[in-house]
Image 1 (tube, helix red, strand yellow):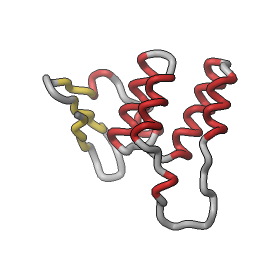
Image 2 (tube, helix red, strand yellow):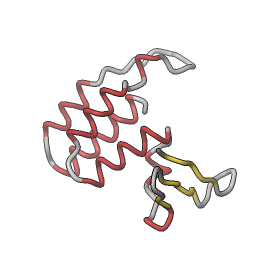
Image 3 (cartoon, helix red, strand yellow):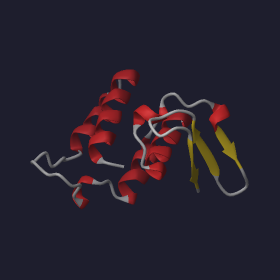
Amino acid sequence: MYKLGAKKFLNYLSEELEQPGIRKLAESLKINRGVVTRKLPEDILTEEEVAYLIDTATGTKNRAIIAVLYESGGRLGKLIPYRVKDVNFNSHSCKLTFPKGKTGARAIQLV
């Protein structure tokens, strides 16, 4: 998950929940905004940072959103139209089916 995406999501979350602590967390994420065409390692959240975001998120839905974004490498805009029917669970993982897109329907496996 990229820091910029996480920061935007945290800002959205702070407005929805009206909790200034979440905005402070978003502001603490330092983002390299230079003219760079490729992603640098410091622009990507570490596993520890993602675990902290998941642990401090309020509500099961918000924790699930952060975890799925991290595991799938997807964008928040792709995740918003999801419905429960688009997720198939088995004993060790779940399969998310993207119903539409530029390249048609596709599925990803999350462990």
